[in-house]
Length: 200
Image (tube, rainbow, N blue to C red):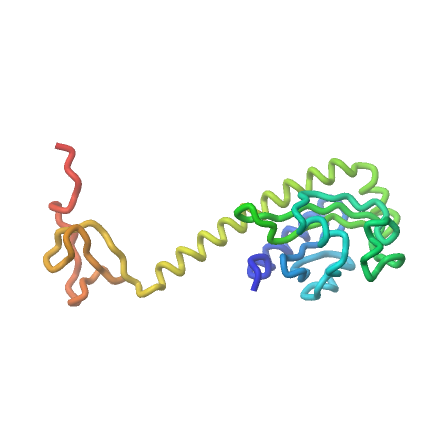
């Protein structure tokens, strides 16, 4: 399961907030080309694959950070897409979602009707900057999620920790204790003052 799919509820919250704020729909999909969140027409496609030969896939996952699609389904860039000539979008702007310098997904602001297209067209560059900011917030959320997951994995991996100590029976400078602060023999662990660093 992709990283974005694992936090799809958070991605959907981002999409809903953006839709409420700017009256434009959002589309979010992962590096497996699966839509993980969306509003408007895109919401009905959650869990489905996007077009492999679509503009977004061919540009965002090729390393481009942002793209503007003025005439979806009509531009030369759209010719390879199966929806060429009958695209549901009126206009769209997309930005990459990255983690550790790797593109792990993309998010876009979409126009599905003429009213939304006018809103997007009037402030196209502002909306492009806006989704870049939203993508940065998502990237922070992803970083927090990955850090938390790593900590949980470390804690659940046997439940034993290593800490400096001269507790009897330990390795020199290291003692193993479980989550109940007990030694391997079941005795309560007490960190003696002898194991603390001295400043002189």
